[in-house]
Length: 110
Image 1 (cartoon, rainbow, N blue to C red):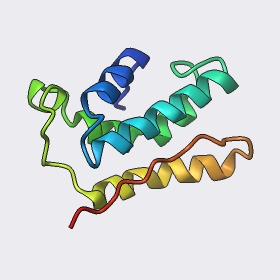
Image 2 (image 1 turned 45 degrees about the horizontal axis):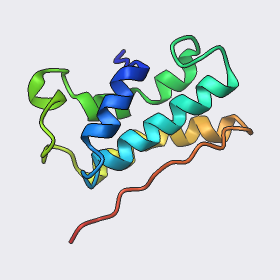
Image 3 (image 1 turned 90 degrees about the horizontal axis):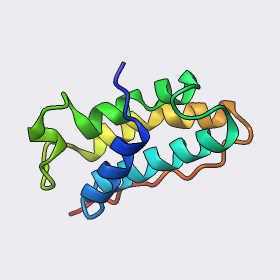
Image 4 (image 1 turned 90 degrees about the vertical axis):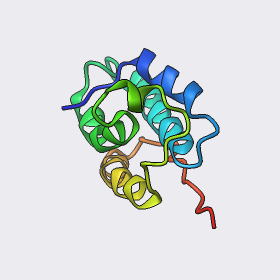
């Protein structure tokens, strides 16, 4: 399973802030991580939110090579992929009544 630690997430948020899809994706992941830290032993210790975010982390880092980790102008992600990656996160949020973290939607660019 892919895992991004808190430093990886913070770096991705800063790197992709202006990206139309990865910006919302990294913000959503950060929101989930922060909620997890505030409602459990922490992000690295509660596997359920990490498993829910696995597709999202895969979308953000792909195979982890520098091509995907350091290229800010990535055009390999689609809005459809992002929506699919959000499904397990939305299911997790539904199952946990107090899971009130924000899921940031990406806007479709015409």
